[in-house]
Image 1 (cartoon, helix red, strand yellow):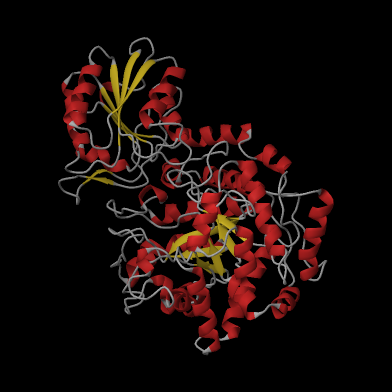
Image 2 (image 1 turned 135 degrees about the vertical axis):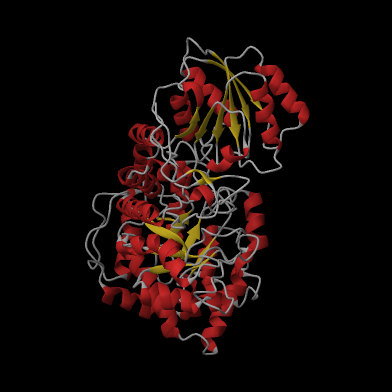
Length: 609
C-alpha cells in the first residue's frame, strides 16, 4: 500500500492544509507535479496561520532535519536505532510530531532514496505527518541533486551532466533543460526543494570541495548558467537554492572539515564571486544557502558567513536586495562549529539573518537554544516570525498547501522517462572537451583500431554509475563496435598493477586511460608514462577535474569529461568513436604544473574533428 492513500483521503488531507490557510486564498499548481505555480499567495492568510502557531511550532519551522529510513512510519530496525541514538525519536513521523520541523533533507546514506516509488511514498508520509499536527503545515523536502558527482537519487531517475560539464557545453538552453528535467522528476517524487545550482566560481584549481561542482572560472559565464538553472528548476516545480553565499570557489580547505578563509578584496569579491548570486536573485531564486567560510574583506570579525550579520543581512539582504529564504549549509560541518558550541550556532545564524537551520548535529540542543534565546530576549518573537513568514510564503508559492501529495502514477510517467534519458545523452554530448589529438588519432576507427584496452582510476562511484569507469567506458565502446577490455588500476596504482596494465596493452591498437585528479606524486603519472613507452597510442580521459593533462607526458589524445557518471562516460565513448564531435570548451584554465602563472589551455579552449 502506498503512503499516499485513497483519493478521498488525499482530498481530505489536502483540504486540511488549505483550511489552515483560509481555503481559496492560494492558487492551485498549474497542472500537476513538475509544473510551475501561478499567481501569488495571500499574505494575510499566512499571517493568520502564523498567529495560530505556538512559539514551539514557529521555532520548529526553522529547522530542516535528517532522518533515517525509507518510510515515515515503518523504517527498518537499524534506522529506528539510528534515529533514537541521534534524534531521540523512532521515525520521521515522530520527529515531525515532536519538533514540528519545517523541512526534511534526504540522503542516500540515511536510506531515504532507495527507488522513485519508495521516495514518493516517504514524501507522502512526511507530508501526512506535517498536516496531522495541531497547526497543519506541509514540509519542504530537500536533497542535494546537483548531478555530476553529487546526486542523492539514482537510477532509474535521469542522471544529467554536472555543473562543470554544463559549463563546458556553454549552452544556457541545455543548462535550463537539464534543471527542468531534474526538477520535474524530483517534484514527482515529492522532493520539493533542491540544493542546486552551485553558484560558486571555481577560480582555484586546488579547491578540494567545489571543483567540478562549479560551472567554471568565468564569473559572467557562471552567472548565465546559474540563472538558466534557477529558471529550469523552478519551472520544473521545485525550490531552487543558489549556494554557497558569498562564494566558496577560491578555497584550499574543505568547510566540511575545517574553516576556510577567502582572501579576496571587496573589489575582487564584486568581480569574481558576486555575479552568479546577483544573477540568481534577478532570476527570482527561491532560496540562497550560506557558506561556512571567512571573508575578512566582507566581515573582519573572523566569523563564518553563516554567522555573519554583515554578510547575510548587510550584503545579501540590504545590498543585493534579496528577499527570499536563506538556508544555512549543514550545521554539522566543522566550518561552522569551530568557534562556537552547537547551542550557540543556530542562535547566531538567526541573528545574522538566516531563516532555515539545516541539519544540526543535536536537534534538541539547537531547538532549545533558540527557544531560550527567545525567552531571554536575545531573539525577539518578531525576528522568528519574519523567518517563518518567508518559509510559509515559499511553501504556499510552491503549491504545497494546495497539493502536498504525489501519486505513484506521476512517478511512473515522469521519473526516468525515455525523453528525459535521451535529453541527458544529447546534453552530455555537447560537454566532452578534446585537449590533445596528436596525429589526428581521434576519432578511433573500428576498422583500423578495433582492439582497445581501457585502464585507469576507479574512484568510489557516485550515484548514477553502473560500475567502475573503466568498465563503463569499455562497455560503451563495445556497444559502438570496438573490442574493448577493462582493467581497473585504481587512483594510486601499484607497480605490480602498472606492470599488469603494460602487459595487457601488448597487441592493442590503443589504450584508453581514465585519470582522476592527478597530483605531483601520483602513481597515475607512472602508469601513463609506462603505457606511452609501449608505443601503443594512449587516449587519456580526465574523469573529474580537467587539470590532469598538465602533469602527464606521452599521451596521444586527451579528453575531459568532468565526471565519471554513466551519462558523461557514454558521451566520451561516442566522441572517441566519432559518433559525436568534441564540442565542449574548457570552462576553467589549465595551468602548467611547474609554473601555474603560465596557462597551457585557456578558458574556451577545445579541439574539434
